[in-house]
Length: 202
Image (tube, rainbow, N blue to C red; front, side, top):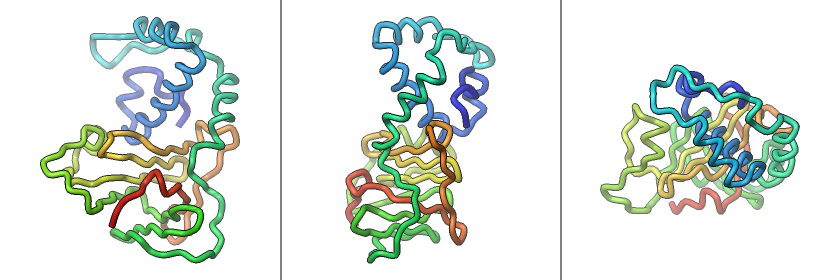
């Protein structure tokens, strides 16, 4: 998905929240970085809208150029934390599995094999806790105390922490200077994430 596709309320609401929220977060960070807080707030106020969701398109002339976005992303790409390159057959230990999804621990982080969405629970006890982020992303599901979620497609990978209600890792081909497809083997998307980002306790 290209960021220009969600510059209107209508388009934003029509897309999958598990994609639009991460992309919006990245683009908001870019705007703050590029415009500074004062200009960002002026832009926000200009397009704040109290009516319905049908209109309120953001005019692209009020936004930084695509080349500025690409330069920003080039600096961020090295630090996204998600590795898409092929994983060598090094020693791996299975540390989590659920409905065919798998997470292996290896020297370089966690090697993940995900069909589309993997919910990760651990031994943390959060009785009566509700995650606002979970409810936004998965409104038709019941929250059962999951700590993390990994979502994957050929163009997107996201990792969410429901205890802090944060997007902790994200890769998007649309927001990459040199986009790559997420490799898929045996029906599962494969990628690496750093251990500190999903440091669950089993």
